[in-house]
Length: 200
Image (cartoon, rainbow, N blue to C red; front, side, top):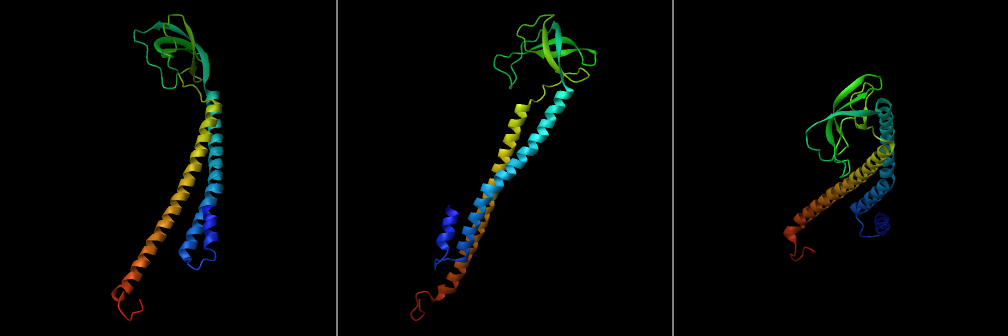
């Protein structure tokens, strides 16, 4: 609104300079880019991120499997602190466990279990790949969508910031040139300023 008001205010103003009109037009174009271009770019980036992340979700769910493991023996290590993405009460303990891979191969390894006091023979679930090697829990669709939305929002904000930064740079250069012209005008008028008969 300030940009539109600026254009209207300078439309027939006798004191209007060319730079005043250019500055108002720059402000209007900046406003339009922020209102139109930033959301479009954000939507495009979000859509691309969503497509890529959902493909990753499908690939992870296809290649990872949830199997039942059995505690074969416990280790003497003290319970470990919960991981950042777990609840405060989800204490994990290191144990030696065995399980059967999706391809039928027997596996055993040292793993962390969400059991406070595990005992030999206890069962728990863990994620593996097709060969039965330990794998991280696959990304779920809802989390992928949240990441895509955040990517789109960030792209929109970066676009708006870049456009506003460009506007500020253009205005700054215009002001610098305006001050330079004023300095040149004062230098020309300086020697005769205030003298009788100079018309000043």
